[in-house]
Length: 442
Image (cartoon, rainbow, N blue to C red):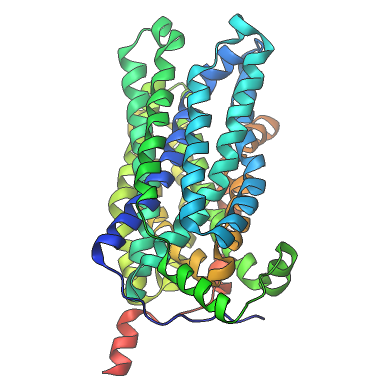
């Protein structure tokens, strides 16, 4: 198995580090805001942009339109990841945020099916594909930039800011959806209200581009480029990465599987399931997403710090196992007593446990691969895992619930993802935590 080359300690100015953290987090936050609000308004968008269908068929169309972006994500991830590993993190991230913003703006401006017919459906699919392509490269390139600016003993803590940006975006998206659903009439909501968050989200693109254009290239990547010019290094092809790094790919894929499944089932699907199948008010259901997201926002930096101090495996593994065990009784409680209290309890408890494997996951993925293939390696596993276990999760769980007649089927889906996550953590390369290193050198 190929070994990773280690880089000497690099001196980084605090101001440069702050700019890099902000620029990395803002694009990732935009990605998750866009995906969060699309899930919140996916049923309305499907009614307005696609041919008329009955209730269950409309829900399937809504989740399919949500999931199409994840089918294209692996292609965007690999191509943009390879670009980031060649042209640099800064160039890739600047292009990505503009593409993402363009897709969001297209959703907000597309006329309805009643106005332009099937062209509306085609434009929504095109916009989702553009979002998916750009989002495919966002997490990997942004995380590479973030971790390459992080101090050696704080990589889990700094990496946890990516999870925080996701949680904040879900909270903002859920809050926006709640406010619109509770303060607009159905006619206003369907007429123009649902477009507002997409138009707002598209404005973040130019702002993010300006911030990213002022950030210096990742110092670790820049140092690699200098070494390459002095002593040329062969870059691995996609097939070479798969051949030389099988353990890293499989381990990180397992971590991505449980992370994305917990996100798209716990934060996105369950509120929609509660409103569509259990009869909860749609606005109230959004409060569940907000509650869970706020718990993640608060907890992820703490779990990142704990992983730096005590090691990732000790932090991630117990929480994964407990999450898999409690998923069934928590969901059963919601199904048997579908009210706001049981939904918020499901989201808060789930999010608390999720934070212990969300917080350290970005650093775990980034450190699995050497700098010259870091963006590409992360893009492969993150987008493949997000497609199979995340983006298609609402569609798969809707189908499972319909075919089996078991409204607790999502709990079994979560349990299956936990098994993959546990295998990934056990296969993960261990590194000595900072506290243990300090005691050994004392």
